[in-house]
Length: 449
Image (cartoon, rainbow, N blue to C red; front, side, top):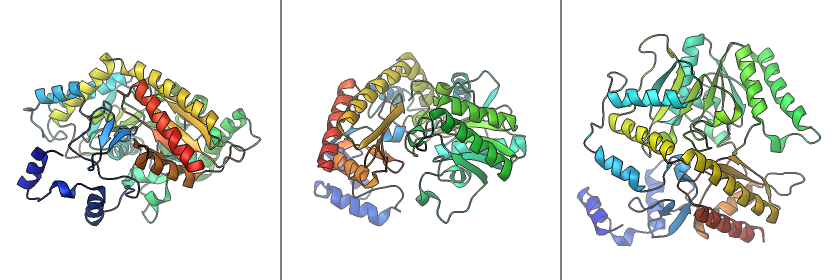
């Protein structure tokens, strides 16, 4: 931080000086002040909120990291992206808050129209704005309940749809998310199609049929009065698992056969990250519901529930205080236009393919890498004790992440139990991808020898 930012803190009543700028000091303060949620303070230091450029972030000690998380898929254009900053400056005097659920404003309406136009399907759609991905999921769920008068859902294992209420009911990626919390709605849960971990001796086709037959059987014995099937088109938190398109299409058909809606959760995989506006487009399915968030807000909290008209049976069935505030809605419109006009859909697909190739070459070097998979700039690397038994190398994965962050200065996150995920900002260059792979290579080499 420079003197200007120290002065701001002093004006706010805090005597913070350069001698306080250590990770140890701020991790201790954070530990004593913040409830522990998903932080791993044994791995990650305290980030400097005043510095950052592109895919480079800094901690309070001035250490520079190459960021491959993209703010967990939030920062489409990285940090301090000049065109975005310029546009934000132009809308600085726009009203920040209007109660958008109670009163209309132009930006919110335009954003709803834009999202309806770029998401799959030509059917009539409606949009509800919210402030997070989990709430975007819940807006769709409440609509499905309202329109079908059914209360049962189908979800998958693993799956992540959020940690609040109804969304948590669908989630199953880590026992820590759910232990002791009550189930908000009835959920029939079936295995997510995970080709890398299909049973030994089973062909691909047999495994795909098994997944669909398991779903059919579950509906027969647990209840087929389902409001919606909720599915990630690419399982994010569960381990960056790419499902076969014919299985997704089969799941869709089963939903329709039972008079249920199909809901694609695009919170992490949407907004062009995979090379298409919605990742479900890779599977040739037109969903009834789409939940979006993360990159939609350009770094600000915004989500969207997109569903069939009229979406709710009447007024006051759903609402939230903050709903695509004018300034945020204008920024979201700019982000969508910029992705479109700057060719990010095409470049995300190309950069993702390039990164996949580099990681596959790394897999040839390291036997502990069992699988590399992904779509566009959403890629997972799965670690195993050996490729024959595919036993999950959870502890090794954790050590590699710690080494990468602390020694190689590569800022990365895990997913599932033994996967490292890569969700970099769209502006990442091939040179930066090469450098990230070199740093990951060193981290792996140091931890297996």
